[in-house]
Amino acid sequence: MIAVEVVLAWPDRVVSRQLQLPATATVAEAIAAAALEGSALCPAVAVHGVLARPTQLLREGDRVELLRPLVADPKDNRRRRARASS
Image (cartoon, rainbow, N blue to C red):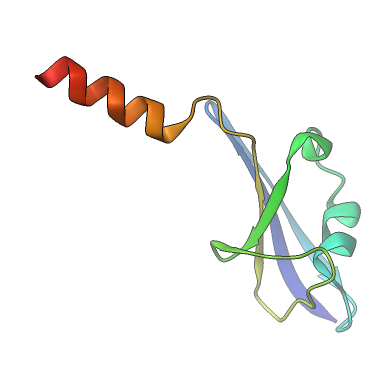
């Protein structure tokens, strides 16, 4: 068994689950086992901040991060800030 954490952060709260999974557990299995509300809305996942595939095997102490969709395009935000400071 390995210990992993599955995390989903919202602007106003963070939901986290500590799990004990078989040594052969994948990212997808960890997400399913955590059963966090809102996880189906997350288009991507990372392990320790690095994008991961659902089939990636997990290791002891891994932190699986569910990534929410972007609210705004970062490039548009940067352009808007540049125009405002001109």
